[in-house]
Length: 390
Image (cartoon, rainbow, N blue to C red; front, side, top):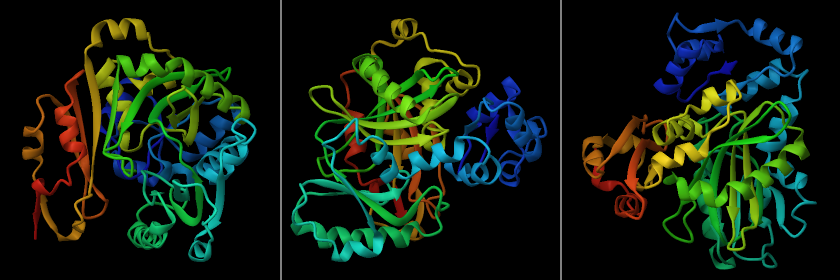
């Protein structure tokens, strides 16, 4: 069963639903996003009854906007509590305190930030909304000297975030301050099967342009990225699954891995893969298997066969976040054709309403392993070369 909600559903996901006759809950928003009588629509009451009759019913959501539906309609299941544990980063850190006893974190109310004494904190640290999405409102604090500047940025973030997503997705009432660990950041699409074992569907390296960068510009996957990290991440996911009793549960997990291979948790995004139908769709472009199908039919990727065909390629999602410094309402157009001309092998381009969201869209590309020039150029770009101002 699938819950569809805003802001976006890809044509690939829609075609997957139709091809497999997966049932979709016929909420008002879902019917607005997918105007197709050929979909296997089921009523909201029937969806609830399915869970009453079978608590192990498989559920996938394309967006965390659907959390409110789950909280309102599936209160008799374990899902609302599991979602709340993961979405609230403070509760998630508390859950893992025994596993990471030296991991510093602190929850703070937004209104207390201006009077908070951070002089004894270990620098650098990360501050972000306790309930967040898409690196919105995330900042790295390198020293006491920049704290006042960071507070102004947070204030600006909050004004921009207002009304952008439901409170279940982004809530700036509470912030979490946590220790910053050196290492590389990775995002994982996975699901926990009927016995609670994690099944990895993709591992993506989240690349940053500098030590202070906290944006979401590039996520890349390849044979080397997956093979190097799969075993350690599998053990980490197993720990998460046991602590939260996860079964038949899809997730998008973000971690940081240091030079010794130690894995530190960042967040677990419940009941979905990467937002805006990104990372799950990339698995199709990159490896030729369908992550939605694999979860809903409980299949496991045959990585050995996949890598025999894809050993020398890297596949990336480029998040065209608006880091130009130009307000979306002041932009007349974005030159997507010029953007595409800067890549030898673009796979798919998805445009976004940049006047409404702080992103121009998402680009999927294939590059040769060892040749990252195209990725480096877009990673460090402020995108102004593609922007026409009103």
